[in-house]
Length: 206
Image 1 (cartoon, rainbow, N blue to C red):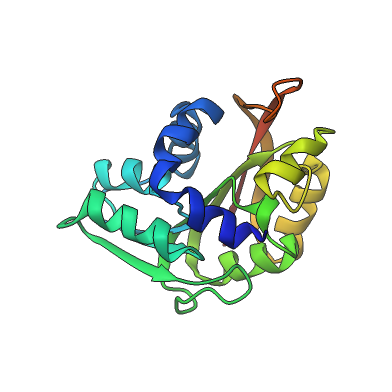
Image 2: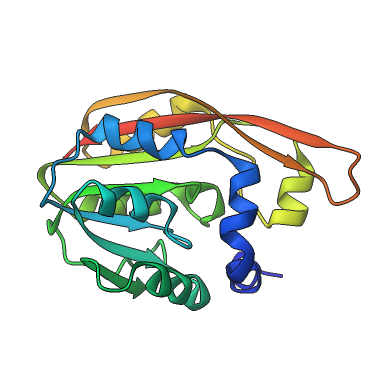
């Protein structure tokens, strides 16, 4: 099963599933790192059912949410109908937004599902206006193989030094990659293993 098919299948249950994986503190720290301002435009990449989008809307921002799962986008539209939200179907390698069109780009738990992380980061950076900020929250390197098998993760987390290097390689400045002070937790299907993986927060400026 592909990652796309997995998320199509779990979309109706994703909000409930997500609460057991990581807390809302992740998005709070991401928004704080970006220093978001009401009225600005943000892109939420790999938006899922709207975990980060919800916080952005509540903070008074306009949001373009991108995901490869139509089912996830439909869940989001049902939840946030009538708010300043645009949903677009798209992939990491070809994001459906114009260059230099948004003030902030967020990607939470997205990078470990993409085929080429550097390509994805370059695409996200492309969307930013000068002075705009990219914030990524994702898994640190880990050894829990069942996450690849059961959750269809493409990567088993990332070394922070690699993430920092990718940000710099695509031309971002003021790059910082630190601890989000949160963990992502999951139990294997058979219940014999429990993953508790730290989460990094990476930020850079266009």
